[in-house]
Length: 194
Image (cartoon, rainbow, N blue to C red; front, side, top):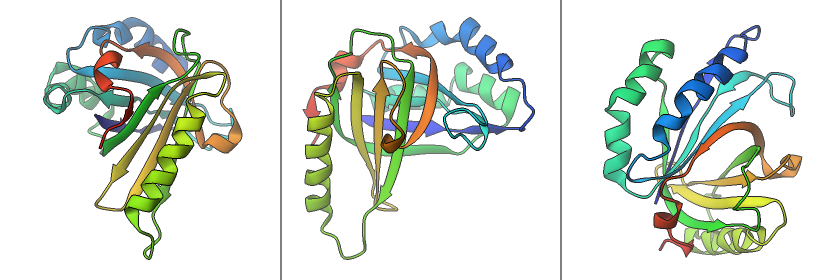
């Protein structure tokens, strides 16, 4: 599993209905994209859920790294580049994935929290603790899906969780989900990825 996100920060007075319309008319195009576990079409609106900016910031869990490459080099991402410029794409190695009790519902929100490992921390110990936290989170009412991933270049963990309803503030940066494409969630596996 691989996790991926890019964020397109938009002007403070940007009409976010443009993004909503874009997702409404194009979101279905990845509903059957081979190799994609899931894509949460996320936005942040300035002033909503403590968001400081307007952003279009989809989050992906890929079951197949070749599919991720096909997407980034294909027509779908070319449209993003054409309309908004080429964003920096963050990418993490997947460590854990688990559906939660609300996996059958359409999620309304997702959270993302990034934590840098301390210089003197043992990475394996920190990751085991983080996985234990996600194991517990995966049993929490309202959780659709939760995942944990690692950027070994920066030694950062990214905590990603989809929520059936509003996401708690303590879970991280909050995003509204406009659409969920989930053609290959079964290919992501359940539990630890290492």
